[in-house]
Length: 592
Image (cartoon, rainbow, N blue to C red):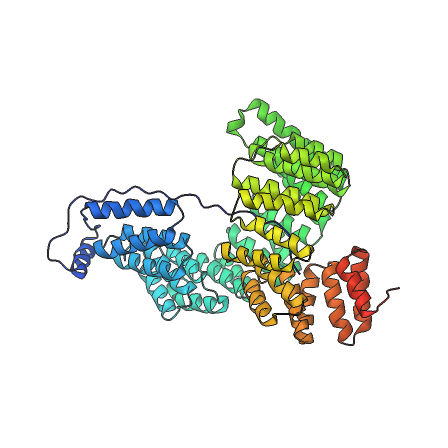
């Protein structure tokens, strides 16, 4: 299934650095290896003469990095590091390579940095982590074990080892490496068992994760992080026991605020709203001055659809924050931001109750600078939902965007308003104008491509979506949209497979992508695999579109009753869904 949701722009801030290398040279006639040996024995940084050529290359690289040319900057710094044996230059090469997302060059730079600064834990950890992330795990366990055994600060060494294996793609292998890396000398440290618990959890071994978390708590009965893991991992193994253990810990440690809030969240996730509210009330009785708990209680009531209670609590919370602002200078508190967050919740409640006018009134009261633009954009969306598109457009056009990011949001929002109103041609005009004024913006091109697809202009759709992938190679939605379109049209299935594999690699649990993969497998004739992916998608997102696809595969798999059940559920949610209606018509199915 294609996803027509604008993505947020990711902006990189320029990276600056100042250099102050000693202005005298190393002894003449020494080889690089000899220089390194002398320096390593002394534990000092090398002395490097900043000649005109070096100074020019450093400054040129910094300017290149500020302009986004991290490839050029990182390679130059790596060359300089090898010429001078200065670890600071190798570190800079590593930083720019990471900013460029070039893992191969990052690994080279990290290894050079570690070679030149073997006593720097950050350098060694970076080299090991990059090697692990690239699948180079041979000898990693023994290397980590040696580091831990030699380290004076064992706890810090265990934490670093855990961070390094955490970079590995294969989490089961990562867990095995960490287990081998921890020597007996650290097995009595709670942090070792916490690290093993986290690694086991990532490796999808919740029982072992819980066992290690309990061991950490046994070694340090005061440890709130250990208690948090007992709750989190225990919920997967034995939820009742995990909650009971957590309550027992809280009884002994009534000031464990983070754990108690975590328990509230997990109870809400389980839809045990009464128990969650009981926990919040217990916290409020113990800490009546903790006004943030008003907000927490309001959130729980909102999740349980007790809207009047939630609204009353939020209004009380806003009143408290207003008093704080009057009594204390705004800059000395976060009262403005807290009150604005509460108003955003009031907006959600009003929308759920279809009180769009009240929602707009709350949006107008938001004065937190970082939220004001977002609030006014949302106001325009609500005005359009109320049927007043002209007013929504005036609201959008009255905004004063500060940068290209906000200009993109304005264009995307206005286009979406017209798209939802069925005025696709106007939406296209808006995005074409935006694409001209803000070129090479992947989000604008993505939405424009989706509009072309809606209009049946598949060549324009394909051209633009390929350009989105060029601009943003990690855009899972773009791969998914193009792959799904090929599968839906039953053409270029080999390319559809490649595109969808890439999308799935980038975002494995995305229900839109799972639906697309299932639909591709159906087109390819693998009904059994198609059912697996479509069912996974439907379990996460029981929309009419997914119901149409899942129902069709069930129908051709000679399971008509299951198909009808899925289609009826989809029809109940979206009676006018185009995909579902076309599917039923094409298959000649009439639902009772």
